Image (cartoon, rainbow, N blue to C red; front, top):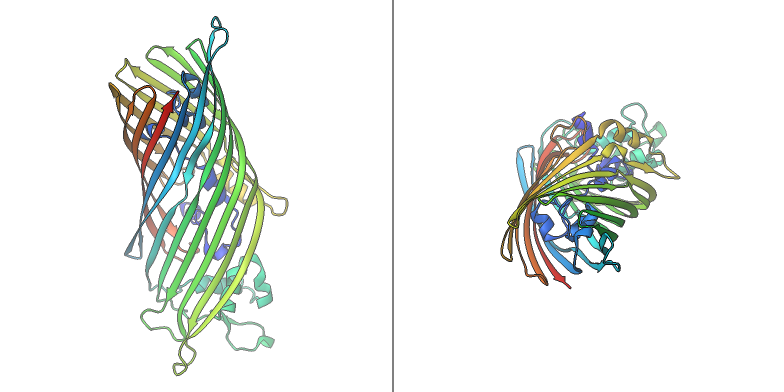
Length: 497
């Protein structure tokens, strides 16, 4: 089961034309904390803390603790590190990008009736980045196994797994899309050269023995523009609601390369396959929350996020294949190329709801300890389309994804105008039988300065995750083991008025 789940987590090049799947639903269902540097330094444990712009996408009741208005801007530097081990070979990649993580403004108003139990009302709007997709990875190694070549699955698609030899016209079906590219690049060929006898497909590297390399580059982000309202009832109960308008911009570029580096395969020199995917979409959700001051030293928080309804998702994808073949040593290598635009596809996506319970323990004026526990049921994600059925993908998610709890812990200590922070978060695996596969850990620390009209906060966040990866169909390719690490350097400038 784990092998099946893992193989579906990547954009398999041999099925690239069927880009919309449970892979997409999971990718856009998993969002992480961040926003301001204060929130990052606390590892996102702000659900019962309040008075921070990050709470508007966590527990919007946090807006009720604002007594003054504030403008906030948060730039961020991402550093991604990926180490991949494939057939005994290790490759490492680093990537950097600079982004705007968060920006917004909160307006706080005193109640017109000073005798009212409603002390303050708040209104806010702004932007939060929910997830960054920027990453680069290289998987490479020499595959000496029999059938250790991507041409083997191409051959199996063309022969319908040994049952029926398809014609080139029949290869246009989506299941044989890559086999058609291979045929047009002369990587698959008719053995007897006489189509009147039916196609008898063959390929050159029938005994494997090729060098394989795949470069994967992803970019884009999952963002949210928010509009929030809140209120403070008698400095005891704080209520808030946020309308979130989310946008997705995801790009994936795959370059797969295979070569006869040891000069043991007749005719075949190399092949290169290019796959590109661009996904865009927009959706909306509602978040509501409450914070209750149970005691001078204790705040309790509860928030609910409705499912996010993405009614206008679109995938645009294409593939291209090149080959270098030497038919006659006296004539040298011949380069072939094939290209197919797989087209565009529109669909709908609903990501799961979330429930967040929180507590903040205040230690006089010296510090605090805060904890959030978030529940999200990934099996409730659904895909839909007027032109394509997603029953298999939706059934897979229902049967193999699960309800998962995410834990966030943070602490903050104060000395005059200066603050020190630290945090830890654990986001568990979304798979029923995945063990700790897909589990992500976060560690953070930060510091800040606040003087009543100006605030400056800095945070560092490290996240780590390990998984296995298949450079093409897991029935043919050995697995790679990948270690992902991301470092974030976050600065927030705040102005209170």
